Length: 432
Ligand code: GDP
Ligand code: IMO
Ligand code: MG
Image 1 (tube, helix red, strand yellow):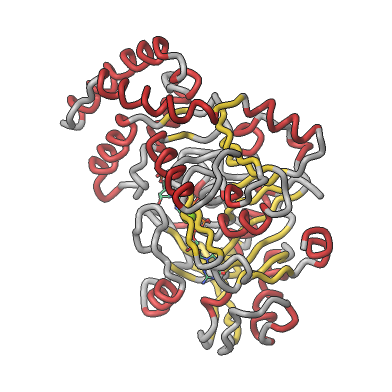
Image 2 (spheres, protein in one colour):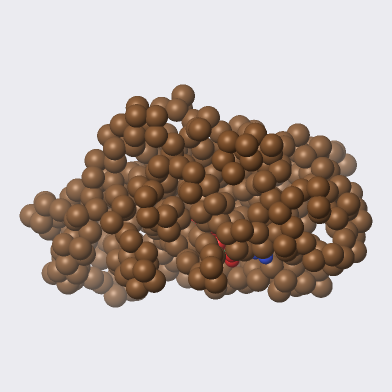
């Protein structure tokens, strides 16, 4: 057994939640290491749908310890409502652990996120307006408030007073927004503290101890490689390290602990929010994929932009995450499309690039070069063996492997827990 990192290889919503859920049955611990409630991870089993924003997707297994690592920013209101929803559905949440070092998302972060997006107008990022950027900005500016600060009420009050004076001035004077009352926020957050206190631990020790005891850990990424603050399509990114490297800073473990990094990718490509998307299809085929794939945001309900599979960005994700394999999701959505396109390279000013840094300036000028492969008509949603897939579906997967030089270890053919093909023989032997 081993320690596995699951990373979104595109712009998010690749199906990380459902793959985490699948592998969670084989591990002792599942850890989130970055992001916040901008994430929306869907898990479906036995007809029940779970939408998780903060709590690791392993929570659906009663014996798995689920840790929210120090790199995550927490909106306690979301956390509490998620706990309540899970408990109402009969899920035991006693195995949740929260790092005392997590930074809190405060009401002024959410207001500042909105204010900034509104002010940017057409140049907006298209954020989830959950206050993610402002919370991470405060962390870097060293004026953030952590869970451990919240648990000490006098320290919390002092920090809140100091920071709110500045935030209120920015909100009212720069953006013309309402200000916040220290007392109200204090009271609201102290009540949250009472509820979440029992879950709070020093997670760095907890996780490292589990590794020392040879426990198996799954690290569940949020967002995707191209949304990484350093390595994504800046500035149209989120504010955390979404790539595999984020595991180490977001949990406090060393790089030698990790055995495998699996990149989750859709069989096509989607993006929600603004920013460059070279293989986007704004016409009929894009609409077809959106409707068939139900491509509407889990967190915000926004329509996702849809397009073809892009080998250039997957090669890049392969490089920055050192991916061991790909989990290809939503292959069923492509059934019935006669000709399927795969982007193999970009053309920029008469030059061909198979590999390129995904900075917006270069990508905005890029034109995708495609190969076209024959599609398949068959309904593949009940297939569980790779060999049983239609010939053209197998050819499509093989083409992706050849063009990206990354093996495909899993293929999903429907949203349910059981709608999965384990293609990699070792994975199948060791886990399933
Ligand atoms: P995440 O953020 O990466 O966990 O992905 P989301 O949950 O935001 O979005 C993925 C969506 O696709 C969810 O609605 C899933 O239920 C759905 N899904 C996942 N895998 C499959 C699949 O193989 N086929 C189909 N049709 N839907 C899938
Ligand atoms: P999961 O984990 C897809 C996008 C937003 C916006 C940009 C910045 O479900 O894959 P933010 O609110 O983070 O400051 O927004 O990032 N974004 C996501 N897109 N899936 C997500 O999470 C996302 N989280 C943020 O749409 O473009
Ligand atoms: Mg999502």
